[in-house]
Image (cartoon, rainbow, N blue to C red; front, side):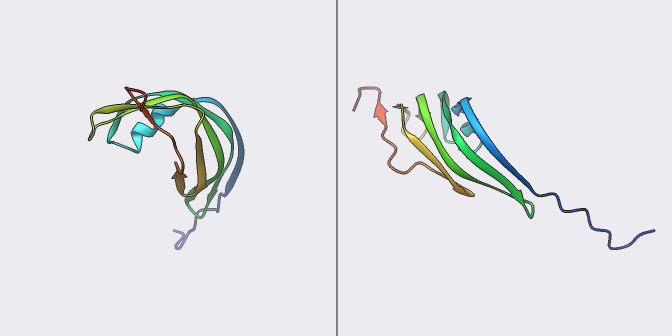
Length: 102
């Protein structure tokens, strides 16, 4: 029997061109939102190294909308930038419009 066996190291780097990917996937990570619609497009690099997934790049929203449960209010966000920075998804400077276009 072999002792101290280590699995081979599998690192991965992918250059990804995203076209019309559904924004609703965020509901799997942000449990306080629902009724999410719209899509994102853009380019990013996804890396899997030392059992950690990271990404860099920018995505642009198209006809995005979501309801924030705590506020019970729906918001729209169109043509807004989402940045991937290491292990963070950043929504800096995201402009939201509520149901009354405020």
